[in-house]
Length: 287
Ligand code: SAM
Image 1: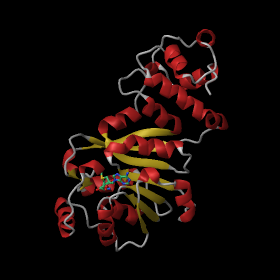
Image 2: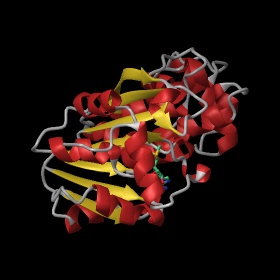
Image 3: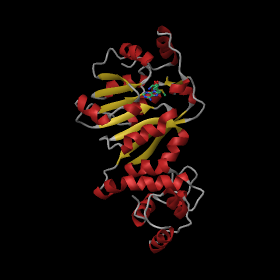
Image 4: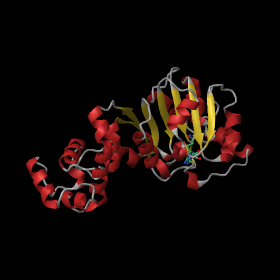
């Protein structure tokens, strides 16, 4: 049975080890058993799954994951938490603790070293200061996973699920929606954490899509186009992409090619759909 499911039990563990939160590591620990249970249920974790948890903290979510999953591999940056995790997770023989920065982890090597063959699900209450690099790192590194279920800032979850033409729509939206189908599961109030974050949170699942060969080939140039468009989002499309130097075409050739493909050269980055960006990347022969 998970033990770490309340404010008092978490504080007891923190006091035992004289642990003080480090704000720079985004340490906001979950103390609400309903939310912990709902995350594991929302992620649809089964005994056949290997779960990779990023940032286990003192192991609250890890305990719930270990009850449901075949295996849990957790990656924690703060070495002060490692002895605490060995203590709070001592009852579970299906948990591996790795003390590392998740941004430095070579997942392909990790999967080989740990002999992971079955379905992989990422589940985490993420450190909010690096949400985007963590998610993009998993999506763009060609890692073999089924889904990512994560607690993030509510506003970031809304960006991942945004529609074109809205203020939330951006490069993160397009990356998430190219690789996955995002689904916001529920929102979480600051009272469910210690210490309380200043923002509302949401749990979102990203269900991985199978990419076609064509999509695999185009992903590099596609994200260069998207980056160029959003880096200069006040400029018109043709200027933003021309200035980025990612195509060998002249500006006039670009304008003609866009005109022939019914893409308006004066459109701005936030109105194009993912399919428009794919078309644009091909039409402009982005390298
Ligand atoms: N999972 C725990 C929970 O829900 O109570 C803690 C979540 S807390 C929001 C984020 C955790 O990520 C912290 O334990 C923090 O130390 C860890 N962390 C921060 N940066 C990290 C990084 N670059 N790599 C791995 N873990 C990191």
